[in-house]
Amino acid sequence: MLRFFVIFVLARSVMSFDYCTISAQNTMCKYKPTSYGTACMRTIKLNFTAADKTLIVSIHNQLRRRVAKGLETRGSPGPQPAAANMREITWDDEIAVMAQTHAQQCVFTHDADRNVARFKVGQNLAIQFSTREMKTVNWTSMIQNWYNEVAAMRQSYITSFPSSPVGVIGHYTQMVWATTFKIGCGIVSYYDTKFQPRYPYKLFYVCNYAVAGNYLSSPVYKSGTAATACPAPTVPKDGLCA
Image (cartoon, rainbow, N blue to C red):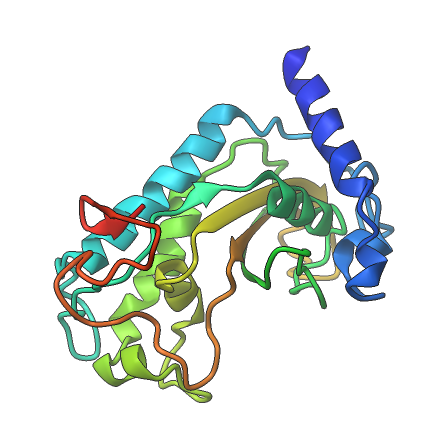
């Protein structure tokens, strides 16, 4: 009972801010976090637990730490340079409600505006589809799939994020963007015959990141020994800046 009360309180606190002052296209201006979009059919409410949050944060920090310490051998070519200024990520309820609200539109595309008053927000999406109803969530697999884009990562992209990279890298670079330090995710299970009609049952994963990454011509991170260029007031913590 407490879980549902907490979710309700979070949704109400988010709704108390007028997101339309950010943009008329902002997800929280256009939609209510307590309802589903017109594209949604046969939706299944999936409980988003504290364990899910811990898992998502933990996997992200494990992978960020792997890169920061110079342990990632893959790339085009590899290995990936170590990172001197990569922040530790923590959970953020506001951008999580935003992610869940977007997921509940049941349309596999990025939302037009997911920014909040505190900062710009980036986003990674993933979808699973099946011939049968799906109730089992696999955050580990989805996050790892985003990270595996490291195989196409060129070292030159670290210093300047490209407009036309060779290969798909955007999910990976958002995951390891040095200044990103918050994450919030959402998920929905629904039925849809418009996208991949042979597999109508969908699981739609949304993760929002703050501050946003993937800015053209900007560095993904600063190359160097792990946690030797931590921005104030952060301090080194096992290869990351916390």
